[in-house]
Image 1 (cartoon, one colour):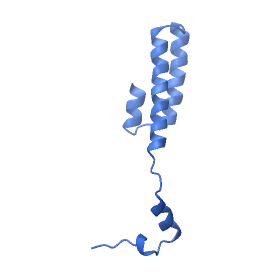
Image 2: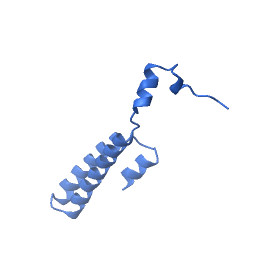
Image 3: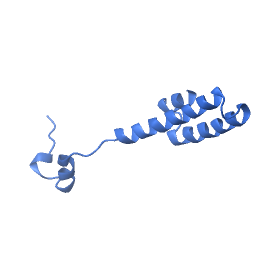
Length: 84
């Protein structure tokens, strides 16, 4: 799972890791056969990376209705932030 570790550690963007994993999976399957264990493991790694990308996309902050309102009316009382 070195691809996923590189993504988690911030060394590589997930899209780049997915592309590299696909290339490696294709090479592994050509060398060992499509029904080999190594081929299945290589494609499992690709799938794990794609799942991680989907989770990251879902985890992005979604705006609340208050945030939308404050974006439209930044001077509204509800939106003012005071430093104490």
